[in-house]
Length: 385
Image: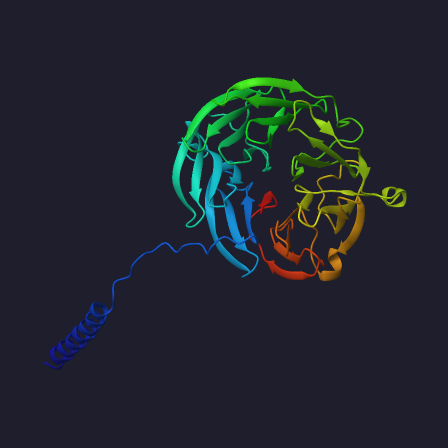
């Protein structure tokens, strides 16, 4: 009898507790899933392309705001993506590959169109299944000056460039680049590709996006004695290339024939003897408003061009003189593998360490502003302003 009363009492207690919980749940408003919009565009927003060697089929583009020092979100980017941003900053384009079974199976290459206000995919364009699967570079996937055409570099290992109409969202054609790689746009109707001979191939397009003409330049890079980094920076119609030994070459591809500037050195004879040279995956950044060229520098020997920079050297591109030298270690900042600078009148400087820390500095003084720890998962990163 006592046991029956105890069981009855426990049952009543459990029933009462359950009733209270159900009443509380019923009183709460149901959860609603919403998609928050990214804050309005800021010139201090930076996009970090992160390709993990541990999971190459699952690349990401991280979005970070240098003013609020907040991580804003990320864009899924598939396998070995190319990434670029429209001139009005409203749209991003990701050229990537998907396999039907994750890391293998039937291959599909697409350009995904991203709304930068939500970071959602709003459309896609299927492209030839041959887009170059390389370490990220700004020139593997890039827009014409007005954003009307998108160029996607291909390697199979033969080389070509797919031309896409961004308004119609369709492929216009494929241009054989005859062993030359990447695409450096000039205006809206032409691009140039770099050749292993140190020359450049410039292709002019007609109104339909088909090849109208092509011209091969003289060699402007000595690929045997002083090769150049492919990640040039742009100053108007000029591309500014930096070589492994610390020389600067400029070239203007916008005319019928390229115009090459006079080579100049980043180094004094004493600095060159001491072993200083550029290094990293994205070695230079340029603020065209202030005419400041930023270069990641390190002490090394032949073959050390991939080593991160322990210092940032700042140059005035008009006088070709160094105006500042930042020793990163003095601010407890690790060497930088990739660098970028915003394009406004009060610029911020960004750098990425080999452990994927995003470093934010004042681009005028070099003073440390913020370090976002381990923003990515690997050292293969690319910064876009």
